[in-house]
Structure formats: C-alpha cells, structure tokens
Length: 261
Image 1 (cartoon, rainbow, N blue to C red):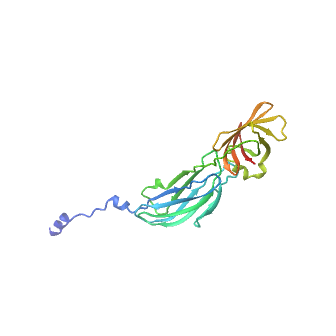
Image 2 (cartoon, rainbow, N blue to C red):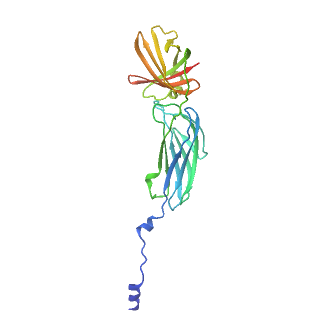
Image 3 (tube, helix red, strand yellow):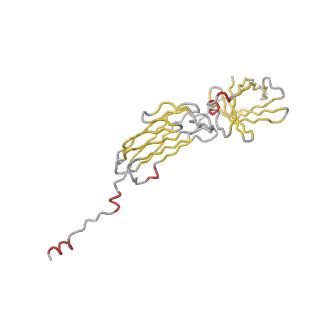
C-alpha cells in the first residue's frame, strides 16, 4: 500500500514533443551589395547566421552569379575578381565550405569581387546555405536573393564627333559583354555624329541617320537606308566615352557598343 501511494502521489516528469524538437539549428542568409557604376568592381558580402540553439555542422554556401544568355556555353555575366579563400568557382556558381556555424546567433561571412556590365535584363544573385545537422527550425529562410542596381555615367554629347560602332547578333542577348566573350562574332563600322544631329556613315552608300542625346546618360541612334528606317538603337553611357544598348531585329537581338572620340 505504501508503494501504491507513492506511485499515485509522486509528480510525473513529462517530456513534451516541443522540448525534444527544441535543439535545432536555424540558418539564415543575407547579401550586402555595393553601389558601383557599370563595369566597375564592387565587393559583395554574404552572411550566414545560425539563430537556432544547436550548432550547424557541415555548412555549405552556394552563390549563383548572374548568367549570360549565350549558347551552348553559359558564362558569368561580369568579371569575377578576388574572393574568399573558402569559395571555389564551378561554372557560374561559387561553392563555399563554411564547416560549423555556432548556435544562438553565430555567423560567418564570405566575400567576392565582381564587375557587372550593362544589361537590359536583371542581374540576379542568389545564395543558399545548407547544413548536415537536421532538421532545421525553419528550412525556408536559407536562401537570399539580390538584383544589382546599375549606375551609369552622366555625360554630354555634341557633334561633330566620330562614333565607332561594334556589334554582334544572337538570340535573347542582353549585354554587349556577351559579344566580347566571342570576339570573332564582333563586326563594326565608323560614323560621324554631325552637329545638326544627322549621322554620316563612312563608306556606306544609301545609309543616313539621326542621333539624339536625351541625357544624362542616354544616346539614341536611328539609321535609314534609302529613306526607310533600318535600325533604332537605345544606348546608355558606360564610361570612357562609350555607350551600349540593343537593337531588336525580328527574333534576333543586336547588341551595340558606340564609342565617341
């Protein structure tokens, strides 16, 4: 009877499912981006933080860099420079081995330098962290996304001035940078932007044109053949007296670089 009374009166020790699940990591990712002009090198910093109450082991950070629209090979849309020693590049991505990120707000940051060209499409980054310590409290905050802001160079244009044109043609191109990856695809011609906003094409019989500088960094060029509109090119100032932009021709995109001197 004494044993029975002890069993019925002693407090019960209950282990809730919440307590069992409480010891978990929780990785979060943020991207800090620089504010730089097109074609200028800026440093990106990606931070992985563990707000859970368990260390996260075997942490890998994968950073997807902006990609070209070239085919069949796809490249990084930009010039990748120095980077954190923990990161290796494979194709258009960086894979960073971070090992353990400690619990309760522990963090680690990686960095990389990249110069981004002018692109008519968004220059998008993504960064995703994974851990071998499972499960996580919240597995849905492991990825951060960022779209680069492009800064151009305010300038002025007055004629007459020589204008060297270079271009290449492809499907869905968004940047003259894509042309420079395949130099043999680039063709060019010379022109003069006249003081009256007309364009004289050197050695091109039947071709004329007009130009408009809409400022602070936009140059619009239109070319005609025997009086009919042949090409309309909308460009932005990328520095060094050069402008870049697209011309659409049916299913093809022609990316132009126009350098004034």
